[in-house]
Image (cartoon, rainbow, N blue to C red; front, top):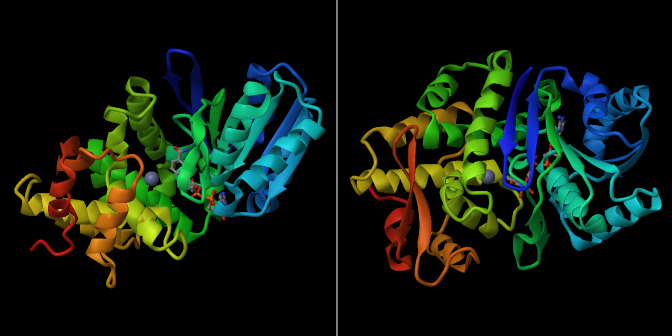
Length: 358
Ligand SMILES: NC(=O)c1ccc[n+]([C@@H]2O[C@H](COP(=O)([O-])OP(=O)(O)OC[C@H]3O[C@@H](n4cnc5c(N)ncnc54)[C@H](O)[C@@H]3O)[C@@H](O)[C@H]2O)c1
Ligand SMILES: [Zn+2]
Protein backbone atom coordinates (compact mmCIF):
# COMPACT_ATOMS: atom_id res chain seq x y z
CA UNK A 1 0.00 0.00 0.00
CA UNK A 2 1.27 3.48 -0.87
CA UNK A 3 0.71 6.00 1.86
CA UNK A 4 1.60 9.55 2.78
CA UNK A 5 0.71 11.93 5.54
CA UNK A 6 -0.48 15.51 5.12
CA UNK A 7 1.04 17.42 8.06
CA UNK A 8 -0.71 20.66 8.92
CA UNK A 9 -0.47 22.83 12.03
CA UNK A 10 -3.94 21.96 13.33
CA UNK A 11 -4.51 18.53 11.81
CA UNK A 12 -2.64 15.86 9.98
CA UNK A 13 -4.11 12.97 8.08
CA UNK A 14 -3.09 9.95 6.05
CA UNK A 15 -3.70 9.22 2.37
CA UNK A 16 -3.75 5.53 1.45
CA UNK A 17 -3.54 4.30 -2.14
CA UNK A 18 -4.10 0.67 -3.06
CA UNK A 19 -5.91 -1.28 -5.74
CA UNK A 20 -8.81 -3.10 -4.10
CA UNK A 21 -8.79 -0.86 -1.02
CA UNK A 22 -12.57 -0.48 -1.15
CA UNK A 23 -12.97 -4.13 -0.06
CA UNK A 24 -11.02 -3.39 3.10
CA UNK A 25 -12.51 0.00 3.83
CA UNK A 26 -14.47 -1.24 6.86
CA UNK A 27 -11.43 -2.62 8.66
CA UNK A 28 -9.34 0.43 7.72
CA UNK A 29 -11.96 2.80 9.12
CA UNK A 30 -12.27 0.68 12.24
CA UNK A 31 -8.62 1.50 13.00
CA UNK A 32 -9.31 5.24 13.13
CA UNK A 33 -12.97 5.56 14.16
CA UNK A 34 -14.47 4.07 17.31
CA UNK A 35 -18.17 5.09 17.14
CA UNK A 36 -20.83 3.13 15.25
CA UNK A 37 -22.76 5.58 13.08
CA UNK A 38 -21.69 6.50 9.58
CA UNK A 39 -23.45 8.44 6.82
CA UNK A 40 -22.21 7.86 3.27
CA UNK A 41 -22.85 10.67 0.80
CA UNK A 42 -22.61 9.55 -2.82
CA UNK A 43 -24.21 9.89 -6.26
CA UNK A 44 -26.34 7.37 -8.14
CA UNK A 45 -23.60 6.35 -10.62
CA UNK A 46 -21.25 5.38 -7.82
CA UNK A 47 -24.09 3.84 -5.86
CA UNK A 48 -24.92 1.58 -8.82
CA UNK A 49 -21.35 0.39 -9.24
CA UNK A 50 -20.07 0.28 -5.67
CA UNK A 51 -22.89 0.97 -3.21
CA UNK A 52 -23.30 -2.60 -2.02
CA UNK A 53 -19.57 -3.16 -1.80
CA UNK A 54 -18.82 -0.25 0.53
CA UNK A 55 -21.85 -0.99 2.67
CA UNK A 56 -20.94 -4.66 3.02
CA UNK A 57 -17.39 -3.84 4.03
CA UNK A 58 -18.60 -1.39 6.71
CA UNK A 59 -21.40 -3.66 7.96
CA UNK A 60 -18.89 -6.49 8.40
CA UNK A 61 -17.12 -4.36 11.01
CA UNK A 62 -20.37 -3.64 12.84
CA UNK A 63 -20.92 -0.06 11.65
CA UNK A 64 -24.44 1.24 11.35
CA UNK A 65 -24.65 2.89 7.93
CA UNK A 66 -27.07 5.34 6.33
CA UNK A 67 -26.71 6.57 2.80
CA UNK A 68 -27.58 9.77 0.98
CA UNK A 69 -27.67 9.16 -2.77
CA UNK A 70 -27.76 12.26 -4.97
CA UNK A 71 -28.20 12.71 -8.70
CA UNK A 72 -24.80 13.01 -10.41
CA UNK A 73 -23.62 16.45 -11.45
CA UNK A 74 -22.34 19.88 -10.53
CA UNK A 75 -25.86 21.03 -9.59
CA UNK A 76 -25.39 19.24 -6.26
CA UNK A 77 -23.09 22.03 -5.14
CA UNK A 78 -26.02 24.27 -4.23
CA UNK A 79 -27.64 25.62 -1.06
CA UNK A 80 -30.73 23.55 -1.71
CA UNK A 81 -28.91 20.21 -1.83
CA UNK A 82 -26.62 21.25 1.03
CA UNK A 83 -29.67 21.87 3.18
CA UNK A 84 -31.18 18.54 2.20
CA UNK A 85 -27.95 16.72 3.01
CA UNK A 86 -27.58 18.45 6.39
CA UNK A 87 -31.17 17.65 7.31
CA UNK A 88 -30.76 13.99 6.36
CA UNK A 89 -27.61 13.67 8.45
CA UNK A 90 -29.47 15.18 11.44
CA UNK A 91 -32.47 12.97 10.81
CA UNK A 92 -30.22 9.90 10.96
CA UNK A 93 -29.31 11.03 14.48
CA UNK A 94 -25.59 11.58 14.03
CA UNK A 95 -23.73 13.56 16.65
CA UNK A 96 -20.56 15.63 16.41
CA UNK A 97 -18.22 12.70 16.94
CA UNK A 98 -19.81 10.43 14.32
CA UNK A 99 -18.55 10.11 10.77
CA UNK A 100 -19.44 11.20 7.23
CA UNK A 101 -17.91 9.47 4.21
CA UNK A 102 -17.71 11.43 0.95
CA UNK A 103 -17.86 8.64 -1.62
CA UNK A 104 -17.63 10.06 -5.11
CA UNK A 105 -15.98 12.49 -7.48
CA UNK A 106 -15.07 16.09 -6.80
CA UNK A 107 -18.68 17.20 -6.66
CA UNK A 108 -19.56 14.82 -3.83
CA UNK A 109 -16.25 15.52 -2.05
CA UNK A 110 -16.76 19.29 -2.14
CA UNK A 111 -20.41 19.13 -1.09
CA UNK A 112 -20.08 16.45 1.60
CA UNK A 113 -16.92 18.08 2.94
CA UNK A 114 -18.63 21.45 3.20
CA UNK A 115 -21.65 19.87 4.91
CA UNK A 116 -19.26 18.17 7.36
CA UNK A 117 -17.52 21.48 8.04
CA UNK A 118 -20.73 23.21 9.14
CA UNK A 119 -22.69 20.38 10.80
CA UNK A 120 -22.15 20.71 14.56
CA UNK A 121 -19.47 23.28 13.61
CA UNK A 122 -17.46 20.38 12.22
CA UNK A 123 -18.05 16.63 12.16
CA UNK A 124 -15.28 14.21 11.11
CA UNK A 125 -15.30 13.15 7.47
CA UNK A 126 -13.35 10.78 5.28
CA UNK A 127 -12.76 11.09 1.55
CA UNK A 128 -13.14 8.01 -0.63
CA UNK A 129 -12.59 9.61 -4.03
CA UNK A 130 -13.83 7.74 -7.09
CA UNK A 131 -12.94 9.89 -10.14
CA UNK A 132 -9.39 10.43 -11.34
CA UNK A 133 -9.71 14.16 -10.66
CA UNK A 134 -10.84 13.48 -7.11
CA UNK A 135 -8.13 10.86 -6.48
CA UNK A 136 -5.27 13.15 -7.51
CA UNK A 137 -6.62 16.57 -6.65
CA UNK A 138 -9.92 17.50 -5.02
CA UNK A 139 -9.90 14.99 -2.13
CA UNK A 140 -6.64 16.42 -0.81
CA UNK A 141 -6.02 19.84 0.63
CA UNK A 142 -9.25 20.61 2.44
CA UNK A 143 -10.95 22.97 0.03
CA UNK A 144 -14.68 22.29 0.31
CA UNK A 145 -17.42 24.41 -1.23
CA UNK A 146 -20.68 24.90 -3.05
CA UNK A 147 -21.37 27.27 -5.93
CA UNK A 148 -23.18 30.60 -5.94
CA UNK A 149 -25.02 32.35 -8.74
CA UNK A 150 -22.03 34.74 -8.61
CA UNK A 151 -19.54 31.99 -9.41
CA UNK A 152 -18.13 28.58 -8.63
CA UNK A 153 -16.87 27.53 -5.19
CA UNK A 154 -17.55 30.96 -3.69
CA UNK A 155 -19.21 29.58 -0.55
CA UNK A 156 -16.98 27.20 1.33
CA UNK A 157 -14.28 26.61 3.86
CA UNK A 158 -10.95 24.95 4.45
CA UNK A 159 -11.81 21.71 6.22
CA UNK A 160 -9.44 18.77 6.19
CA UNK A 161 -10.65 15.15 6.11
CA UNK A 162 -9.59 12.63 8.76
CA UNK A 163 -8.21 10.34 6.05
CA UNK A 164 -8.29 9.75 2.31
CA UNK A 165 -8.70 6.20 0.94
CA UNK A 166 -7.89 5.84 -2.76
CA UNK A 167 -8.73 2.70 -4.71
CA UNK A 168 -7.49 3.10 -8.32
CA UNK A 169 -9.59 0.08 -9.38
CA UNK A 170 -12.65 2.31 -9.12
CA UNK A 171 -11.39 4.21 -12.15
CA UNK A 172 -12.12 1.20 -14.36
CA UNK A 173 -15.78 2.22 -14.57
CA UNK A 174 -15.07 5.90 -15.21
CA UNK A 175 -16.10 7.13 -18.69
CA UNK A 176 -13.31 7.98 -21.14
CA UNK A 177 -14.29 11.63 -21.06
CA UNK A 178 -13.94 11.91 -17.28
CA UNK A 179 -10.79 9.83 -17.35
CA UNK A 180 -9.21 12.26 -19.81
CA UNK A 181 -10.59 15.15 -17.81
CA UNK A 182 -8.62 13.96 -14.76
CA UNK A 183 -5.58 13.32 -16.97
CA UNK A 184 -5.42 17.06 -17.69
CA UNK A 185 -4.62 17.60 -14.00
CA UNK A 186 -2.12 14.72 -13.98
CA UNK A 187 -0.40 16.37 -16.94
CA UNK A 188 -0.47 19.66 -15.02
CA UNK A 189 1.47 18.11 -12.12
CA UNK A 190 4.08 16.87 -14.58
CA UNK A 191 4.30 20.25 -16.30
CA UNK A 192 4.76 22.28 -13.11
CA UNK A 193 6.97 20.01 -11.09
CA UNK A 194 7.85 16.56 -12.38
CA UNK A 195 9.47 16.07 -15.76
CA UNK A 196 9.73 12.30 -15.34
CA UNK A 197 5.98 12.06 -14.67
CA UNK A 198 5.38 14.11 -17.82
CA UNK A 199 7.66 11.87 -19.87
CA UNK A 200 6.05 8.74 -18.47
CA UNK A 201 2.64 10.04 -19.56
CA UNK A 202 4.04 10.73 -23.01
CA UNK A 203 5.23 7.13 -23.29
CA UNK A 204 2.03 5.46 -22.11
CA UNK A 205 0.02 4.11 -25.02
CA UNK A 206 -3.27 2.94 -23.56
CA UNK A 207 -5.57 3.17 -20.58
CA UNK A 208 -4.46 -0.39 -19.67
CA UNK A 209 -0.87 0.76 -19.53
CA UNK A 210 -1.86 3.64 -17.28
CA UNK A 211 -3.57 1.21 -14.91
CA UNK A 212 -0.48 -0.95 -14.56
CA UNK A 213 1.25 1.87 -12.69
CA UNK A 214 -1.82 3.80 -11.53
CA UNK A 215 -0.99 3.55 -7.82
CA UNK A 216 2.45 5.04 -8.38
CA UNK A 217 1.16 7.82 -10.63
CA UNK A 218 -1.58 8.76 -8.17
CA UNK A 219 0.97 8.68 -5.34
CA UNK A 220 3.24 11.06 -7.29
CA UNK A 221 0.41 13.52 -7.88
CA UNK A 222 -0.78 13.37 -4.26
CA UNK A 223 2.79 13.95 -3.06
CA UNK A 224 3.15 17.08 -5.17
CA UNK A 225 -0.15 18.45 -3.87
CA UNK A 226 0.62 17.45 -0.27
CA UNK A 227 3.93 19.33 -0.35
CA UNK A 228 2.29 22.51 -1.65
CA UNK A 229 -0.64 22.29 0.79
CA UNK A 230 1.71 21.81 3.74
CA UNK A 231 3.63 24.97 3.02
CA UNK A 232 0.60 27.03 1.99
CA UNK A 233 -2.70 25.59 3.25
CA UNK A 234 -4.74 28.71 2.54
CA UNK A 235 -3.52 29.15 -1.03
CA UNK A 236 -1.87 32.56 -0.84
CA UNK A 237 1.58 31.49 -1.96
CA UNK A 238 3.27 28.43 -3.46
CA UNK A 239 -0.01 26.42 -3.63
CA UNK A 240 -1.01 28.77 -6.44
CA UNK A 241 1.35 26.75 -8.67
CA UNK A 242 -1.52 24.27 -8.93
CA UNK A 243 -3.39 26.90 -10.92
CA UNK A 244 -1.27 26.34 -14.02
CA UNK A 245 -3.71 26.50 -16.95
CA UNK A 246 -6.52 27.57 -14.63
CA UNK A 247 -6.52 31.35 -15.14
CA UNK A 248 -7.54 30.96 -18.78
CA UNK A 249 -9.30 27.63 -18.05
CA UNK A 250 -11.71 29.14 -15.53
CA UNK A 251 -12.54 31.97 -17.94
CA UNK A 252 -13.32 29.43 -20.68
CA UNK A 253 -15.53 27.38 -18.33
CA UNK A 254 -17.39 30.53 -17.43
CA UNK A 255 -17.90 31.52 -21.08
CA UNK A 256 -19.39 28.05 -21.63
CA UNK A 257 -21.52 28.51 -18.52
CA UNK A 258 -19.95 25.28 -17.17
CA UNK A 259 -21.76 23.20 -19.76
CA UNK A 260 -20.41 21.38 -22.78
CA UNK A 261 -16.79 21.59 -21.65
CA UNK A 262 -15.22 19.81 -18.69
CA UNK A 263 -12.89 21.50 -16.20
CA UNK A 264 -9.96 19.41 -17.45
CA UNK A 265 -10.62 20.33 -21.06
CA UNK A 266 -10.69 24.03 -20.20
CA UNK A 267 -7.48 23.68 -18.16
CA UNK A 268 -5.83 21.84 -21.05
CA UNK A 269 -6.51 24.77 -23.37
CA UNK A 270 -5.35 27.15 -20.64
CA UNK A 271 -2.01 25.34 -20.21
CA UNK A 272 -1.39 25.39 -23.96
CA UNK A 273 -2.31 29.05 -24.56
CA UNK A 274 -0.33 30.49 -21.66
CA UNK A 275 2.73 28.41 -22.53
CA UNK A 276 2.51 29.35 -26.20
CA UNK A 277 2.60 33.02 -25.17
CA UNK A 278 5.37 32.69 -22.61
CA UNK A 279 7.45 30.74 -25.13
CA UNK A 280 6.84 33.49 -27.69
CA UNK A 281 7.91 36.08 -25.09
CA UNK A 282 11.16 34.17 -24.56
CA UNK A 283 10.31 33.09 -21.01
CA UNK A 284 9.66 29.41 -21.64
CA UNK A 285 12.20 27.08 -23.25
CA UNK A 286 11.62 26.65 -26.99
CA UNK A 287 9.73 23.48 -27.93
CA UNK A 288 7.77 23.26 -24.65
CA UNK A 289 4.47 24.30 -26.25
CA UNK A 290 4.79 21.48 -28.75
CA UNK A 291 5.37 18.96 -25.98
CA UNK A 292 2.19 20.17 -24.26
CA UNK A 293 0.27 19.93 -27.51
CA UNK A 294 1.58 16.39 -28.06
CA UNK A 295 0.62 15.17 -24.61
CA UNK A 296 -2.84 16.78 -24.66
CA UNK A 297 -3.62 15.25 -28.05
CA UNK A 298 -2.54 11.88 -26.73
CA UNK A 299 -5.23 12.01 -24.04
CA UNK A 300 -7.87 13.39 -26.41
CA UNK A 301 -7.77 16.74 -24.71
CA UNK A 302 -8.24 19.96 -26.67
CA UNK A 303 -5.49 22.58 -26.87
CA UNK A 304 -7.43 25.26 -28.69
CA UNK A 305 -11.01 26.26 -29.40
CA UNK A 306 -12.05 27.42 -32.84
CA UNK A 307 -14.59 30.06 -31.86
CA UNK A 308 -13.22 31.48 -28.69
CA UNK A 309 -13.15 35.24 -28.34
CA UNK A 310 -9.97 36.63 -26.77
CA UNK A 311 -11.67 39.76 -25.43
CA UNK A 312 -14.24 37.59 -23.66
CA UNK A 313 -11.47 35.49 -22.09
CA UNK A 314 -9.71 38.61 -20.82
CA UNK A 315 -12.93 40.11 -19.51
CA UNK A 316 -13.72 36.95 -17.56
CA UNK A 317 -10.25 36.70 -16.04
CA UNK A 318 -10.52 40.28 -14.87
CA UNK A 319 -13.93 39.57 -13.33
CA UNK A 320 -12.50 36.69 -11.29
CA UNK A 321 -12.93 37.62 -7.63
CA UNK A 322 -9.53 36.19 -6.75
CA UNK A 323 -7.72 38.91 -8.67
CA UNK A 324 -7.09 42.23 -7.04
CA UNK A 325 -7.18 45.51 -8.90
CA UNK A 326 -3.48 45.99 -8.86
CA UNK A 327 -2.36 42.67 -10.18
CA UNK A 328 -2.79 39.02 -10.88
CA UNK A 329 -0.70 35.93 -10.25
CA UNK A 330 -0.20 33.80 -13.32
CA UNK A 331 1.53 30.43 -13.46
CA UNK A 332 4.15 29.83 -16.11
CA UNK A 333 6.71 27.12 -16.73
CA UNK A 334 10.38 27.68 -17.57
CA UNK A 335 10.41 24.20 -19.07
CA UNK A 336 8.57 20.93 -18.43
CA UNK A 337 8.69 20.19 -14.69
CA UNK A 338 9.70 23.70 -13.70
CA UNK A 339 6.75 25.95 -12.94
CA UNK A 340 6.74 29.33 -11.22
CA UNK A 341 4.37 32.06 -10.08
CA UNK A 342 4.59 35.47 -11.70
CA UNK A 343 2.78 38.55 -10.50
CA UNK A 344 1.84 40.85 -13.33
CA UNK A 345 -0.19 44.03 -13.81
CA UNK A 346 -3.66 43.48 -15.20
CA UNK A 347 -2.64 45.60 -18.20
CA UNK A 348 0.07 43.06 -19.04
CA UNK A 349 -2.35 40.15 -19.00
CA UNK A 350 -3.23 40.27 -22.69
CA UNK A 351 0.40 39.39 -23.53
CA UNK A 352 -0.27 35.97 -21.97
CA UNK A 353 -3.75 35.31 -23.29
CA UNK A 354 -3.09 36.06 -26.94
CA UNK A 355 -4.66 33.19 -28.86
CA UNK A 356 -2.26 33.46 -31.79
CA UNK A 357 1.06 34.88 -30.68
CA UNK A 358 3.08 33.26 -33.49
N1 LIG B 1 -11.75 20.85 -3.61
C1 LIG B 1 -10.81 20.95 -4.51
O1 LIG B 1 -9.65 21.18 -4.19
C2 LIG B 1 -11.19 20.76 -5.95
C3 LIG B 1 -10.17 20.64 -6.91
C4 LIG B 1 -10.54 20.41 -8.22
C5 LIG B 1 -11.89 20.29 -8.56
N2 LIG B 1 -12.84 20.40 -7.59
C6 LIG B 1 -14.27 20.26 -7.91
O2 LIG B 1 -14.48 18.93 -8.35
C7 LIG B 1 -15.64 18.90 -9.17
C8 LIG B 1 -15.38 18.02 -10.36
O3 LIG B 1 -15.06 16.72 -9.92
P1 LIG B 1 -15.25 15.45 -10.85
O4 LIG B 1 -14.67 15.72 -12.18
O5 LIG B 1 -14.81 14.27 -10.09
O6 LIG B 1 -16.83 15.47 -11.10
P2 LIG B 1 -18.02 14.55 -10.58
O7 LIG B 1 -17.95 14.35 -9.12
O8 LIG B 1 -19.25 15.14 -11.15
O9 LIG B 1 -17.73 13.15 -11.28
C9 LIG B 1 -17.74 13.08 -12.68
C10 LIG B 1 -18.72 12.03 -13.18
O10 LIG B 1 -18.14 10.75 -13.04
C11 LIG B 1 -19.00 9.90 -12.30
N3 LIG B 1 -18.11 9.01 -11.54
C12 LIG B 1 -17.28 9.34 -10.54
N4 LIG B 1 -16.55 8.29 -10.17
C13 LIG B 1 -16.94 7.26 -10.95
C14 LIG B 1 -16.53 5.90 -11.07
N5 LIG B 1 -15.57 5.38 -10.30
N6 LIG B 1 -17.16 5.12 -11.99
C15 LIG B 1 -18.11 5.64 -12.78
N7 LIG B 1 -18.53 6.91 -12.75
C16 LIG B 1 -17.95 7.71 -11.84
C17 LIG B 1 -19.83 10.80 -11.46
O11 LIG B 1 -21.06 10.18 -11.13
C18 LIG B 1 -20.04 11.98 -12.42
O12 LIG B 1 -21.06 11.72 -13.32
C19 LIG B 1 -15.97 20.34 -9.51
O13 LIG B 1 -17.10 20.74 -8.79
C20 LIG B 1 -14.75 21.12 -9.03
O14 LIG B 1 -15.07 22.43 -8.60
C21 LIG B 1 -12.51 20.64 -6.30
ZN1 LIG C 1 -8.32 22.05 -11.64
